[in-house]
Length: 546
Image 1 (tube, rainbow, N blue to C red):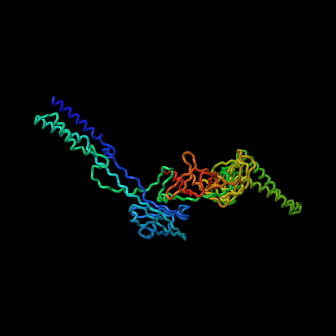
Image 2 (cartoon, rainbow, N blue to C red; image 1 turned 180 degrees about the horizontal axis):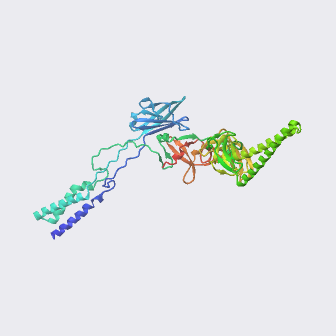
Image 3 (tube, rainbow, N blue to C red; image 1 turned 90 degrees about the vertical axis):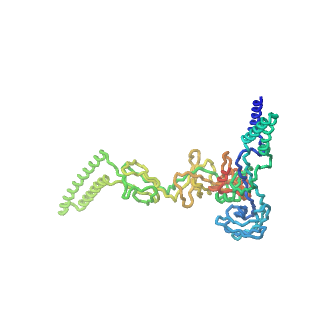
């Protein structure tokens, strides 16, 4: 009976000991969980004027100052900055990367500091004021000690229980009461502090360690804006422009392509079927500059059997006639000495003989000499289809020569309105071309009218057949904000947005509606108010910040 009761008591203590970890309460999970450091930003001060925008950041016991142009966000690298600090006036020292630094041990203490910045740059003198608020240091969270496990508590309980049973049997006094009492006493003495710990007790004597300031990083904020540190702005080359409401002539986008000037292009073709052969030095290669009259290739006309028979017959007839005339001239020369034949008759016979000999020689040349293909204009070889031994057909294009400085643009317009003289084009690589309207065709081409424009100046990087976008001016007038084309980015949902520079390190996306203005700009007709600073470079990179 005693043994069974003893076994029951042991089982109860084991269940209590194994359930000890469940007694942990709020703030004590009794497990070694890694603690992530808090994400904090350094103390900051912002100040701006019509000319400058200044940002001061407390970092590692010094004040880092970023000075930019207010409208363009361009760094000012040649400025002199004097700061009125709590310890007196100090001068910031410039660094190679366009950042100014100032020793600020006084900013290590928490509090608010009124600072006055006197900026002298490029003949401009400006005074900027602001307040630097330094927060209280944030203590690092202390890691919890691993608590005693249920197995340690089980060992303590079983040890006390065994000791109590031993003394109970040895003393033979109330064994079923004394044994559990001693076991519970040992359990309480060993693990009570761990099992019933409450908030505010860290179970150890760890020292308080202050976290260092976490580095700033670009991130999208909950309100939809983007936080971009100044250091990142310098790396991404972020630039802005002030949006102003202006009036512009409306322009329409037309699909176009580059074509050669008819007076600055030429074709080299064969007039008869023949076999190509290269001139001395070989065929000209693509891009080779040629001059008018330069021989580019030869075409040797082959003779068929019937042609050769006809030629042999003509040669025989000519040889016979030449022989007859030669004998006649020989007789005339003998008779002319006696006066029986007039000198005129002898001269006519000689002229007839010369004509027959020329015909005979031309037949020989036609069989031997090939046709020379010459360049019709000065220019560059744009197309070359010449191969030695190739048989070409009549009017086959062997070479195409184009003057690269004389190019036209042909566009298709589905509108009946004729564009004004002013027009521009945007090449695939983003360059702007100035165009002059030449004329419009009367015949429809796929329900559109062909418009031709001349490219002003000497175009570079263009080739015939290249597709470009033509922006032709119309008589209508529009008002809005002009912005660079790269300022407008498209979201995944199809909306067009621009980013505005609202603060030194904060940008906000605005949904806008645009119309084409010219090859490099668009017109924002709605969605944005005048006076906002619009990001003109790196807007696509800002759109990728998450």
